[in-house]
Image (cartoon, rainbow, N blue to C red; front, side):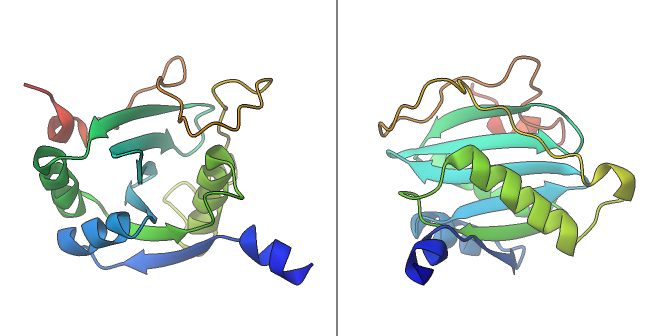
Length: 163
């Protein structure tokens, strides 16, 4: 039984703000989280695409997009460390945990360890799944953001413009 609980745990660690290290963590199958004030951008590679989820502390929803796993977007991700206040790695078992539960838990953990400027709002973290009623166990990730999302934060917009 103890092994079952271990599979349901997250490991969070502070990363050095180095673009190559961030790419290495993504290549290893881990989630990378970059933070700019209370804006969080979660990055994970899935099915040969980068999936990025954004959330601002206190917001009831977030955004989600995916990008090809190519050099253009690898270069963009490498630059994120220059813009971010901090970078983190989140290690978890993808087969045991739902992605939105991981996002919420990771953000709560980061805010507990490294509170933001608005400590009163730090506890108001909520993610809305794309369809709460559907229990789809397929290998597909959601393809559209939550209504009203602002993905990515205006601080990251210029990195992901498609020309």
